Length: 211
Image 1: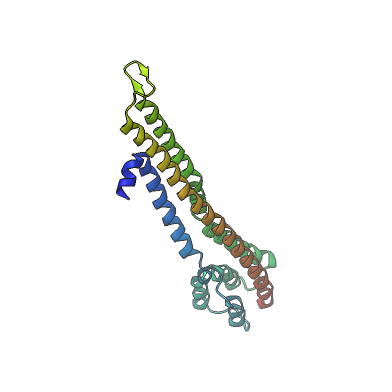
Image 2: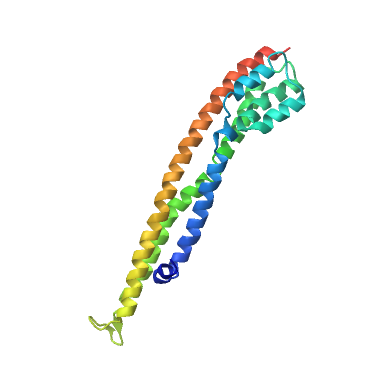
């Protein structure tokens, strides 16, 4: 590996940094976008059952909010009823929608950065390719300019290595980053739909708790 890095020249270090950032983002999103952290199974049913006889005490609501992202959305509606037992439907809907927008921002965090890695890596690879081509042309230059057949073979080989290795590394980073970005974006869209449906169902339940 070290020999490949040496053959690829200094432009490869920008791609290595890019790959480390991309890998860190992929791991972070894999950890954060787990179903148990976003929309645990049966949490909506459990929240409805816990509040069937009235609004639960603040400690229970706080526990629900800490459970997951869906729990935080549902807890926002219960907190409105704690402060105003006769809250209107518009007030309850506004609270749920506000919590939903916050959840959407948290779900989409770092996806833009991952997309940037996917689009930047090929450009960095292209930069390395151009630098390699410059070295290739430089290896053919003699005291009087370009001299076919009179260049430096070692410098020519190094220029070719720089060009090819950087192109390959750029694509090797960009392709997985693009795949993961599309996968996580689709996963986020699915979570947002589940949150929206659950919030709408919980809103109708909250309307029955008003006094």
